[in-house]
Length: 135
Image (cartoon, rainbow, N blue to C red):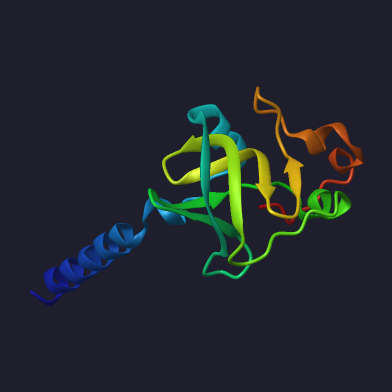
């Protein structure tokens, strides 16, 4: 009897852990968004995600995770995003993810991908010394 109770508890714990893993926790990469997404333009407000590292775009349609590539590339182009800043983003949208082609704010703009979805930083020296810290 005790063994069956232990097995039941173990099974319940495994099911609860599996149920807790949401799609938002799955690692989605920009190339995945490009492969599955469609090109759209969205406007909204830039915000940091709860992790304090990743960026999201808050729109009337919902919040979208931004897949921006290497921060070093954006820094080299002097592109800085500010919390609460309005932005227009054209990019590949899949579910609640965006792999931006371009981002425009009131003070700056940057191109991150081609219309075909290729990353523009791959054509630079960033492709040779690729950062482990990509978004």
